Amino acid sequence: MVAPKKNKDVEVEFDVNEDDEQLSKTQIKAQMVAMQKLGESLVHLGQSSLAKVPMEEELLDAVMLARKILRKKEGYRRQLQLIGKIMRNVDITAIEQALSNIKSAHKKLNNAFHEIEVLRDDILSEGDSKIESAIADYPLLDRQKLRQYVRQANKQQAENKPPKASRELFQYLKQIING
Image (cartoon, rainbow, N blue to C red):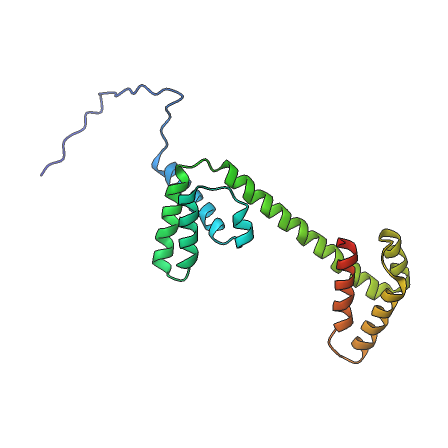
């Protein structure tokens, strides 16, 4: 069987409107992968976070099924492909916005957690001077209680005991600062 010869002198013109641009296979595949990754992030959300994401019933059912078959590698992969296929027919801006809000709230909590850790470490290392500045920033803190935690933490550290007082100080700071 001989392949037909192509005539290089013949030019083919296509009427391509700006509105009707067709995507290349590579672009289509990139979109499919992006939809699957977005679907995978939905699958890995916690139940309360997933409830905050607006989605159609069909997509929600597919996500819930993917959560059930998470351990079955091939089935999970195919389910993610299905989720991606469903998402191509859905307006995903609301889903992306909800995921963005969830991530920013998580990041905000993480930053607050780290600030409290730093404050605790500073109080334990600097003692009374840092206690005074912490009370100036957060007037609800109890000076006597802070000093007691510092004494206990120093004693536990000197005796090579677990840092129970340090953890209690962190919980106390978290309770007062976060209200």
